[in-house]
Amino acid sequence: MKRGESFRRDVRAWLEDGLTGAFAQARGLGGPGREHEAFDIRLAWERHMAAAGWTCLGWPEAYGGRGASVEEQVVFHEEYALARAPARVNHIGENLLGPTIIAFGTDEQRRRFLPPIVAVEELWCQGYSEPGAGSDLANVRTRAELDGGRWRIDGQKVWTSLAAQADWCFAVCRTEPGSARHRGLSYLLVPMRQDGVEVRPIVQMTGTSEFSEVFFDGAVTDGANIVGAPGDGWRIAMATLGFERGVATLGQQVGFRAELEAVIALARTTGAADDPLLRDRLVRAWIGLEVMRLNAVRTMAGVAAGAPGPESSISKLVWGTWHRELGELAMDVLGAAGMVADGRPYDLSDVQRLYLFSRADTIYAGTNEIQRDVIAERVLGLPREAR
Figure 1 (cartoon, helix red, strand yellow):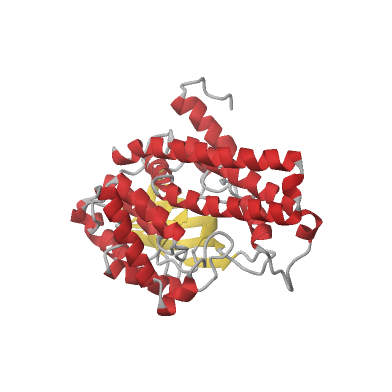
Figure 2: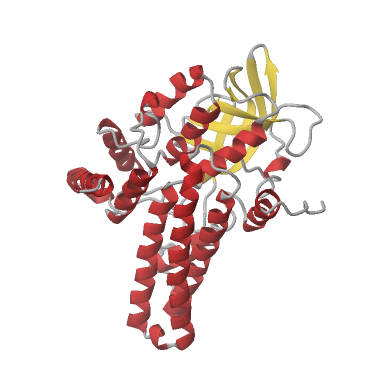
């Protein structure tokens, strides 16, 4: 039996055995719009995974991972999604911050920060977006100044996922006074449990709050908690975004396929499948998903070679647009019934949740407009847009 097939069998068997008892009730919980669901059980589940050696698979063994091949990582993420295992609570630490420290951090930073990520003992959040620097990250205004061997930080971040649960934040801050745009930014690691950090959850229409505003008011972190050199934060931040668009996207697409199949089944139930226009859109959605997978597999070569390049923006642009359009298609299939909530105060069906939360897919982690700029200028080498 080929190694990949054997590994898939092992993963499937472990998940089937592990998702029993108390963990069985966590199946299918969490994810976009549902991060509030069963958080404590999902955290316990992920620590159970860590104890069995199933976290940070692609990391080198020297840093606590398994050194799994790209093929094996893809297999794991696919099987994880097929098993409807709960959404990960340590995604930001494992898939964003960890690979960034491995690629750009110091040996001391690797010793300090990587083991607690592997063991799911410390959770992370991402301090990128600000009220005036959302899609335009280079407009960051949060300031940090080196004062007596410590960085002192003042400013505000927004749309910070899992900030209320995080122990640490990796934040892009302006550390060179008078600098502008991409210059003068630094990538700092900041403890969240301190007096200088205030987290204010952002309550949504549904009553949930999966992301927050974060205020730094004289927050401090050790002078050594900077990844890369001062002023090199933009390069490090872009590498982190590249890691975010790595192997885990294949597992994400398994979830997309399940959503598409549910929409197709709904179309058959409601009779929408008999409408030639809606039927054509369903076929196009299926084709788009197949193209998306082929593109993602192609870009895995960049992941295997190290930090992904700007080509990773292609996958973000493709899946963000496709998923948003699937949400719109789902509501059209549902028809007028989609305008009525399942219950009070704001209970949503799976189709309604898909529509509402997929609206954000073309905004977070880099808007479509910014991704097109990156692809045009840094991949195709076209002239820079006039600013």
